[in-house]
Length: 74
Image 1: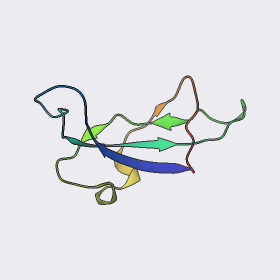
Image 2 (image 1 turned 90 degrees about the vertical axis):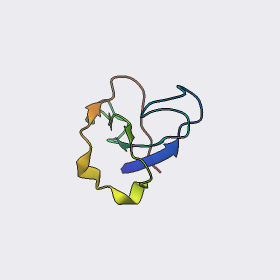
Image 3 (image 1 turned 30 degrees about the horizontal axis):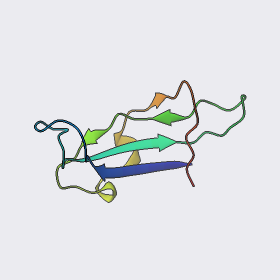
Image 4 (image 1 turned 45 degrees about the vertical axis):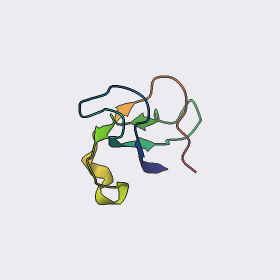
């Protein structure tokens, strides 16, 4: 029910930590779809240089509740 997701920024600023070409990771938690389930969760995205998703532990990312919508981890 949880995942670490990474990618490369393809549109955005021309410079800075979150510029085009920067690698970023974020985490998500799917806590279910029922109104009785806890809210799904997501972290901020973090610039990671040349690291990959497997270089991180899930517990390193503070999580925030998703107020609207659903996170689906398959």
